[in-house]
Length: 113
Image (tube, rainbow, N blue to C red):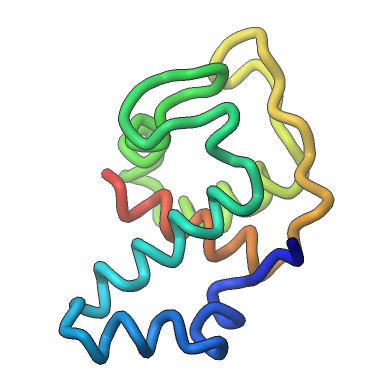
């Protein structure tokens, strides 16, 4: 399946459909972020609320909540990968993602704090 950015999800009508049935915008954006994370296999190593192979995304949001540049920082980590921040298991670079998709995921993660 071809991956879709938040903008593409919105353009495809997913966001509009959610809003038209009375789902608040913040919840619709969160649902779109979760959908993108599931499409891009983020949930193979992460869960929203519990550690799997990688840290719980809620814990990631809490750790970086005080950083003004948190979403930008996480976008780079998502795109480039990371080692040693959360333990010995490295997170590989996500070269299949566009910068916009990585930004959407990073922004969504930061809503989980």
